[in-house]
Length: 468
Image (tube, rainbow, N blue to C red):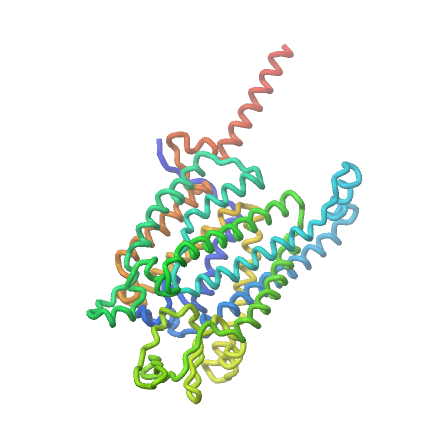
């Protein structure tokens, strides 16, 4: 008897592949490297098609396109929903069904729009916050713990019980891979073989995660703060996912309403953020000169020249004014976006053409994710994340010829093993891989159905015997 088998794939798993493909295209339009993205890492910033899109420098613009994609996906679903409702002549619509429940069963009428708006605010804030964390150029989120949050919320909100095979997934992700993540956090990210202390100081990523955080923010107190912010970000996303499924399955909220409200709320929040980030730079330097793409600033006496280490800046969008000799760092800037996209030459048209492609990909991703939530499980939304990280990291290392100035071989191997193991764990959770030992297959859906059918047949036989 085989110890491992393979189950049937649900037709809704198609949406997982659509998200993976669309996310990959979005990565190509921004940057393939998801670990580091800084000049001092030695990374070749051009992506697989040998062009560094300006979209990569504007995280808020990416968020805006994501929310617009969600809005358009909601509008498309609303049109489809409206046509279907018109075709159901003589049948109760969802709205009428809800009114009948309140009228005949005495259920308290609750304004569900407030709940949907709250979820929209949480999820939109999560996307904006996550983009900021990604812009810091390091990953301090112990994502393996996220499955614990999802399992807990699913149990509390959706009353979902945990099967034996799902416990295996939890053990792999929350225990085995969590230990791997702790190990990787103490490992050196890049290696430039610098010889002097001054030279080594330029390469912030030639250190472990904790030293990188200190180098970015200037104090060790920010290490626990960053970890807490990541955890809050995970909880916001997980709660939004589980609560969205609850609203659709239990409260019969239409999918289009959730997508529309999330998209509109997110768009408003991004516009507000754009106003602040455009007018409030992260930092600025006076009396700056640029020599071979390297910036130096002078002290008050104009005698001492100091190099500006880009990797230690919290924000990475650079605006250098050659006339005033002022260097300014922004998180994002709408005015700089307009300056960069005003050209209509070959490169400018390519940049402008990338925006509608990114928008279409975001539309498909939003639609696919809401369908996965409706018909599958919130945990399955994490599958494409690890798969895309695996592909993006592999391609980035190939483009950079596996140079340790980009990513050390040791950390590359460990991170890729983590992604592979996580995907396998999710396949076990999704019952595509079946563990047929130690009763790990006892709670598989097909076995539960088989037991129910068998018990039903036995009950029928028992009733016939009693009649006889």
